[in-house]
Amino acid sequence: MLLADIFSPTDLIVVVVVLLLIFGGKRLPGLARSIGSATSEFKKGVDEGSRSDTAKPDEGTKPE
Image (cartoon, rainbow, N blue to C red; front, top):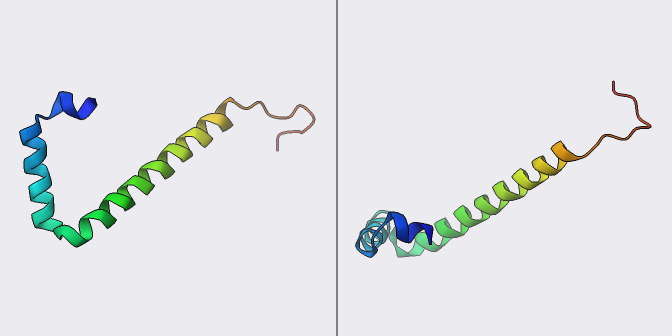
């Protein structure tokens, strides 16, 4: 796992405690949900962009 290579378990616990102190227990799940949806939208946009870059234009249409 990538995070396990970067951070030790103690570092992750400290980060979680600091986040709980800053945002509180009620706002933290909503924040994580919004970060997750933003990440999925970003990945979807990257996939669509790479597909449109590799797609060939139709031979019957003339470029304007």
